[in-house]
Image (tube, rainbow, N blue to C red; front, side):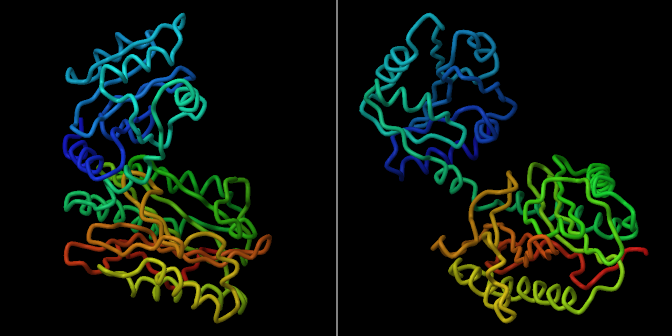
Length: 366
């Protein structure tokens, strides 16, 4: 069990309108309970954490013995049989735990059909608890910041290597395989990547890998991995041959948008101002409208977490926050450019850009 974050969770609960938190199987539950990673099926189950730190688990009888062996001894277990009415067993468990009439937060994997059925038949209210779970780990510890730095160093190194690997006639899949293999060989876990060449670079979350690199292409590389559970996430462009003036100008504009936004990052900065500054730079060429997504997202134990860097998130930066800055110009069906770093508000309250891979134009072999 992650005692440090379990303590943080109970502290967050004590300062919230919730009487308890329910965590269904998934990343959030696995994060708190270590290796406990049960299968999520249609049968209702979940870990309940009360404000005082007391915990109990409701599951189907199918899993009772397995879970009893895997869960900490302090976690009380309530099991229901398929022949019983699930909501009646849940009602009895909540009554025994003093939670009838309560408001319970749920995590991101709670299944709506189960939650709604329980609310229809049991005196309990379920509310969205995802923001609470995000706040719990939004401020990285010194050890977590070090892991973020180490993870960023891996993707920096791989960028230096992949430049000479790319060439015309190569498939996106071959480049993906290279990135994933090298991140793994250098000690990175959970490696992920997007590779888009030519027009495919114009789709922000391109998900295919069948494109073939051609001369005059720009190749978008968006990739990352974990070190000690903490993610890296970086995007760079590789030019295959000399670009035309339009592509060169837009590339330089996106780099400047990235740099100008990062200059604002420090303790106390209003998040919408960072997003706004990046778009102001892009709009010097009338291109802010192509940035159809947020400027950045939190990075840590998951690749996308709090805080979001966008104009509709009116918060102020605090020490320990880690997030991406990734402006882009996306001309659908033509080409796209994105430059992404992970930055942190470090122990001194200053901006620390974790990615050091060059943002100068780099060229593949032709």
